[in-house]
Image (cartoon, rainbow, N blue to C red; front, side, top):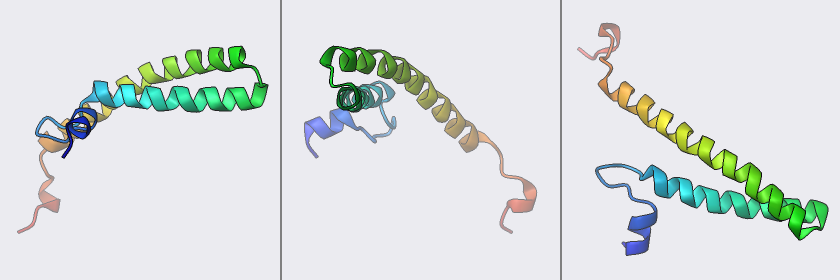
Length: 88
């Protein structure tokens, strides 16, 4: 496995690196937002402004969204299985 792949998307014992995952999401989101805004407006400045504001806020929200999902996953691993669902 390449060093870049390990750095960008590490599924090791620690799981995904939420900061790296957030940054790659941000790059993708900025690119898509700028492309759509530019195509709709035909203006690089307006497209750039839209691409900077909305994805920046959304990227921060995504980071916390990812943290909440990680907490949910940890709680599910710790939660005991109800007696009725246990195999005998």
